Amino acid sequence: RLLHTAIERRSAFARLSEQDLAFFQSILGNSGVITDADALVPFNQDWQKKYEGKSRVALRPRSTEQVSEVLRYCSSRRLAVVPQGGNTGLVGGSVPVFDEVVLSTAAMNKVLEFDEVSGTLVAQSGCVLAALDEHVGARGFMMPLDLGAKGSCHIGGNVSTNAGGLRLVRYGSLHGSVLGLEVVLPEPLLPPPPSRGGGGGSSSGSSNGATASAAATAGSTADGRVLDLLRTLRKDNTGYDLKQLFIGAEGTLGVVTAVAIQCAPRPASVQLALLACPTFAAACTTLRAARRMLGEVLSAVEFLDSACSDLATAYLDGVRNPLLPQDAAAAVAGLGEAGDTGGGAAVVARGRGGGEEGLEGGGVGDDRQFYMVVETHGSDADHDTQKMERFLEHVMAEGCVTDGTLAASEAQAKTIWRLREGIAEALARRGAVYKYDVSLPTAVMYDLVEVLRQRLGAAGFGPEGGVQVRREGGVQVRREGGVQVRREGGVQVRREEGVQVVGYGHIGDGNLHLNISAPRYDDDLLHQIEPYVYEFVRQHNGSISAEHGIGLMKAGALPYSKGPVAIELMRRIKETVDPYGILNPYKVLPQR
Ligand code: FAD
Ligand code: MLT
Ligand code: ZN
Image (spheres, rainbow, N blue to C red):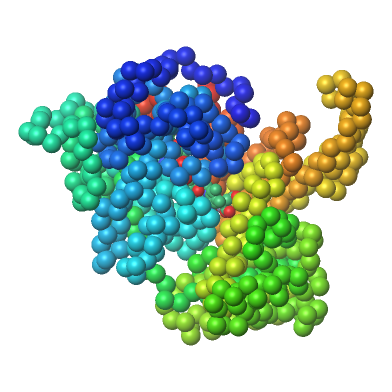
């Protein structure tokens, strides 16, 4: 709707016909084929409501075999397909650009195997991350990734975006924790194997309840397009590690149908602190101290500026910042009501000024203040508490932390996490959001937020804004203090621009989420932001996508982070695996 106006529908792709629908119904049944216009809206629209396609059908296969049948048919008909998991992606990768067939994994939600000795889980790709965490949690384990979208995103979507999230600093990326994958390719790489007599190729089979290997083999390999890499081995050096190709491929190379993943033991002791730092440099010093002093138990280090804190508390019900005076009492009361016996949020630290004065430096709207969420996962509460307390004493004595609160219960921990995890949702509620998810050297990470704030302010965008007068489309436009004044049809029109530039993210991973919130999408604003942001990232040897991926949004910007040889190799891999280009077209790779 927004950023792909320059893309044209590829004429090689067929248009959906009644016969196609009849075929899909014959293999998936009526409930597996969605064609009702209202029911299609959530499949066509992304989480941010920024990208919108016009697909006429969403398919919900239940088994690997059905996915294989769908892809075989779509390939033979040259129907383009967009794989979709929980549709929480933030780069426009999960929705059609035009009329692509949506292939949803929502009905592929069975846990296939869990090994309680090794902690290896095998699940169909449509399992929701939070449901998997609950499943393994009941057996003493946790999923090795966690993110704000856990209640909706699918494990197959996580793998396909190589999602990072809140605990990558401790449990590593999916390139390490994914042990095996089962993927259905758009084209068979081998001729069909000789029939084994029965079972193979039937159209209604389901791998429900099957073991991992059975899921991979029962019928579904019949046409040579199921790539069975579904192993649960920690070590396996047998040639190229092909599964890595599909981790982060964003649905352009194959449809992930099952995932084998290494889970971590659920920690017996969890400590969580929310800290206030007076500057971003102080936040970096705090990060270094956390690495040094919390070492092996450190499980998350996140940051948000106070503009983010204000947005989350203003736009989301029940979200509080326990370090802010107006929120502290309410937060304590709220936590008490939640059945907490620990007596509310314990403010354990005050800045050098001591006592309540420590709070005065902060305050609503002061974006020079930074908050950090520091978490430990360990096995011995006494040991971990002692470590956390020593760390807090140290960072306060150094002056890099001026306030802090240590969660004394699970309810308090939830309050703190909600403040951090709620930022994306708060921004979405405020209006249009230009989202950039970049890797940068940690020390200069926040410079990007500041230079962009200045740049947009000088161009007349932003709450502070400078003054700018220029002609746009033959009309004189004056911008001042975030208000745009122009004459339209002989009438003077004033428009609140209210552009806000905020920064938050996974500081422990050098991953900044730069977000520009605006009342509406505006091409002038976009041109002030891009390619400036990408150029800044390239100048600092960063990456234009730390964790959200490229999708549709950044396909044209890929050369800012990848050289021509790398892009050519990506293209050749794509052409080998998907010669007709039917899988998630227009995404990831720049147009030739
Ligand atoms: P979708 O959005 O459905 O799809 C994402 C991409 O993967 C698309 O290109 C799609 O075609 C492809 N895909 C999906 N399933 C398959 C499959 N089975 N086979 C092949 N391709 C497939 N991301 C992070 O990295 N870290 C975060 O902390 C984080 N937090 C978030 C918080 C919120 C509130 C939201 C809304 C999003 C967040 N995200 C984050 C972004 C998002 O990438 C993740 O939510 C998640 O990994 C996407 O999973 P999904 O199932 O929703 O995939
Ligand atoms: C996060 O870390 O909160 C997510 O990646 C979502 C976002 O960037 O808004
Ligand atoms: Zn993130």
